[in-house]
Length: 229
Image (cartoon, rainbow, N blue to C red; front, side, top):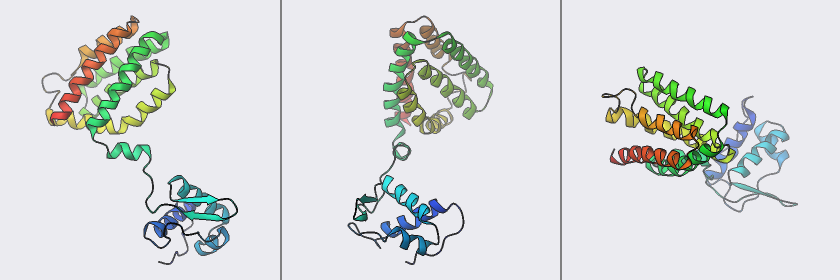
């Protein structure tokens, strides 16, 4: 397949995609040394800096490897899946089990580390969740996730916060589906309010054991519902 000259923008993404296609379609098998930057730049109709960035992207995907003094070689024909992609492919129940591990620990840490600003944020998030009771299922789920995010933020651990943020897109869709399929808000539009209020209260009181227990029970109930879907 001829590479062909590229359109003006976005050049790096286009160059990376064209080179990736050459590899994944078998035109450059594993072990093949790629043409030099100058040759690739001329063939693709871009500058060497664009080719260099495209090759870095391929290296990040695990397709090529630069060997000092030898050139760039193909080391795989299929890109490695990044963490967000793996999460999107994972079963929602598997993601939820890991969420439980993260959030229960975060709730316990939040009870020990929360500041006045954290308590204000938690109260505001709980209030917003209650207001969302009159909104759509998607808006209610967003408000629910925001409250859980405030709990994680109160733990003051950037790694936990980063992990939670990675889970949010997968969690959101799974929870929206759960609420709609099981019609969880038909009897009570503010489903789960009592448990969430108890969680915020436990964190405010500095009771790590109660915070962890309360959140664990709430998440276990949701997980059981997801597993039954």
